[in-house]
Length: 270
Image (cartoon, rainbow, N blue to C red):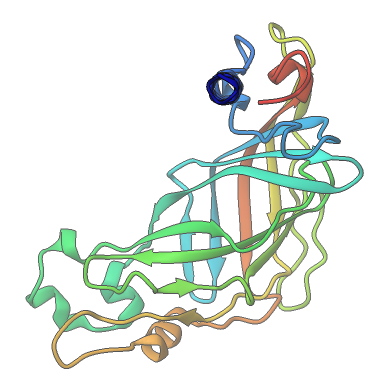
């Protein structure tokens, strides 16, 4: 009987844990669903702020290539004062690289072998480290960009965790080394959300950086007979690595800021 009771108590405890987990996964307060990728206080008890950054346009110029931002980029993160940042989700978008595979390799004969859709190249940004507090200026954003194409290996990246595209994005004027000249961001409009309590939005901001160095491409293999690692020609065609003062990033940004207890009421746990 004592054994049966112990088993019953254990079963109830497990059920309680499962119910708590289910409740935690569904704990986003009504209306705050856009913030539900932010880590809650179950990750860190000091988390107080949830931030969702959305990039709707702009460009990234590195070396001789400029890639427009046409596919939105989203970053959801939480902040524990004074400066701890916890990333919940990063979607770096899928941007079309002008010139495609021929443009980044210089291998013009590829157009005689493959249709145009197989020669398109997309750049997908990934985090290469932890960003800084999103409400500071400038915002540090370490990235690496995977170059995607059916004829390229999945290991083809510009930048890496140890050698990232290290952006310091500002709403104000930059101070780059020559030959670049200072450029200006736009502070945007800071407004209270008209519907959701404890939510503030930064709208129509533009953040910029033209003082960063661009790393080289690594791990690029062309998946064709007789060919292999093509890092040297990708770097030559793209002008990489490219020193500080010759590159530029511009992002059109909207930022939503929410009190974590409003997102995961009443205790801030997701």
